Image 1 (cartoon, rainbow, N blue to C red):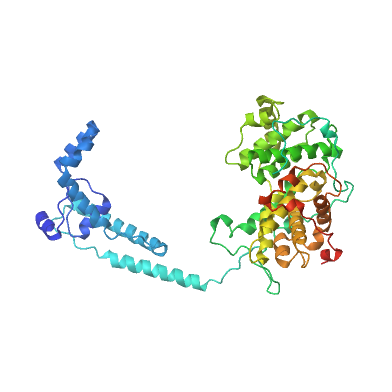
Image 2: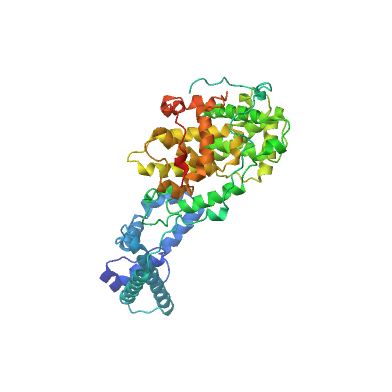
Length: 484
């Protein structure tokens, strides 16, 4: 009977152990499974267990056996193709059910030792009908569902290494009036509003419509920035630590430190996010920890070391930060300060900065342009970096600083139209009236009204590759621009 089945199906009798899938294919073709593996297979198995070289010799000694196995494998896989995503789930169900039924039949046939050749399985059309009915039900359910609305609501570089002298720290910082009223901000819960629920009466561009680029995270961008708007209030440095806690350092010393860190960033070609995060760590640590002026530079390089590890692909090592301070501090002192900073921060190094929001707001500002403006991008980044040096800008939220930088950059480049539009108001959640105090203070920094001697950022943005945006000036914004 076995010989007849072999002759009828055209498959040779297997001489080695086969898988359940091969058994199913063999039975589907009308063959009968052997009860025990052949003696040759057992002998080869012993050889493989005793020597690894025997495996290499099988290519020549067992050519007929391998040919038979390869023939059966082709019989199983000959219909395999690159399946579409729509049919992948259906085919997986079909194959699994078919394999399960055939394996059960194989077990029953092996126990009973039936001499009658098994017929072709009749359960395959039934499985296919079941799968088709399941797909039809899914399509009907998906058609009945209502469409859900998406809820969205360098010249003149300093020489390195360098040590900041204590006499240079005597320069007082200049900028906005420290006694100015602190702006009252909205509660975090008011930021968590759907942003993409756009009314038809407003001309608002959808900046998240480009869902083909996975790096833009268009499906989750609104939720991400809603989260950041709440986090910028919770993890916020104090805006008056110089007056309440620090007695040995001044606003001018902090400005000199940040100005020097800008040069360090340019020297090591670090990304802007590293600079913003460094200043954030410094202000957070100084908000609750007393610092002596002789250790202020140590705090600065330590915070930049931590920020580099978080933001950079290849962060500078500890020795490089020691060298850039003319070896004023040792490696052990830097590592000890790193432990203090990390313990104070609780290893929560992720924090929204003005640079984080500036990317989103610039994308909204560029939506009204046919061709993206590099000059607008460089100018907005320049204005936002100017606020890092001025201590008085700590009273403004990072998102407010980013929105004001975009407002003033648009006003500087073009005074013929209003710098604020419904798209920017929608994605920033700020009206023009909310930006008045910040924009006026930011313009004083742009015009250098108080003759600030710290010029690292200005020299950086006077380069031609950055469109020389530091040389641009703007007229004072009209009060009508801030009326709602």
